[in-house]
Image (spheres, rainbow, N blue to C red):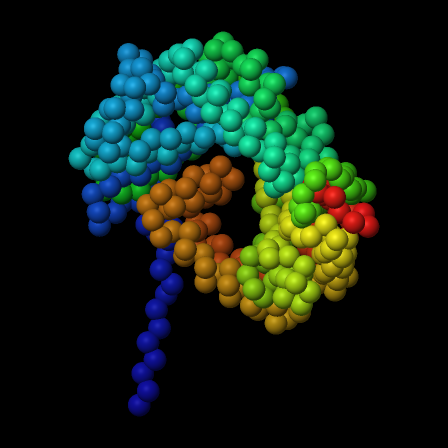
Length: 426
C-alpha cells in the first residue's frame, strides 16, 4: 500500500498582520520572536522627482542629513545615542520615494523609536552637517565622472527622459549641490514627510498592540497630507537612438533599453518571464549564452525591468573591447529581435518559471528583507495576498502571453543605446 502525503504551500500572507495605531497609521507586521530584534522599513512617496527646479540632489542630501542631528542632539550626539545601544538607522532617496530603515535589539525598541521620531520630525539641518554631506556627495560625483558605468547610466537616462525629473541624477551634479540651501532642505522635508504618503512594515519581536502605540510615537506628529507637485508620465523615444560618449579607455560600456510594461499591467508577469529568458542574470539566459559563452565578447551581460510611478523600463548593459563593441551590440539586438518575432521556446518558459518561483523565497530570508518586500508591495498598491498570488501568476504565464509581451516591449519601439568609450565601427 502506497501512502502519498500532500501539504499546502506555506502562506506568506497569513503571517502578515495589518496594524492600525490609535491615530490611524497603518503598518504591516510579521511577529517573529526567534531572535530579539525588531526591524522597521518605511517609505514616504515623493523622492528625488520632487527636487526643486534646477537643484537636483536636494532630496538625496535631505535624506542623508536626517540622521545628522535632530532636536537638541547634534550629529555627534545623535550618532553616539545610536552607537550606545547598537541601533541602526539610515535614510535614502530614490526617484519616487524617500525610504528609511531601523534595526534594533528588542530591549532598545523604545530608545530606537525615539531617535526615529526625532529624525523624521525635527531634523536640524545644521550648516556644518550640510557642508560635510555636500562634500561627501561631491567626492562621489567626482569619482563617477571617471567611471564608465556611471557615465553610461547617466547618458542613457538623459537620452531616455530628457528634462523630465527621471532624467536628472538623484544625487545631483557638482554644480547643483553647491546651490542647495538649508531652506531648500526644510521646504522639501515639509512637503514630503506626511502620514498620508507613508508606508510601513515591521518584522520582529513585537506585538500589534505595542507597535500601534509606537507608530503614533514615531510618526503621529507629522502633517496629515504632503504637498507634492504632480509628475507627468513619460515614455522613451519610440525611434530609439544611439549616443556615444567619448572616453579614452580600452573597453566600451554599453547601456540599452526601451519602454517596459507597467507593474499592474496584465502582461507584466509575462514580461518578467521574458526578461529572465533574455538576460535575467542566469547562465541559461540568451544574452549570457550568445554574448559570453559562444563568442567571448564580454564577461557579463544582463537585462532587467524597472517600474517607476510614471514610467516602465526594459534595460540592460555590458562592457566589451572597443574593437568588438559593434559585434556585441549586433548580437544583443539580434536576440531581442528573435524574441520579438517568435517569443521564447517552451523549454525556456519552463526553466524561467521554475527559477522565478523557486528563488522567490530568497527575498524573505532576513527580517530586513521581509520588511523591505512588504513596503514595496504597499508602494506598488498591492495587498497582502499578493505574497501568495505572485508565484501562481508566474506559473500561469503561457507562450502566447510571452509572445504578446515581447511584441509590446521589443517590437513597438527602437532600442535606445548609449556607449562610453571609443567603439570601433559605430
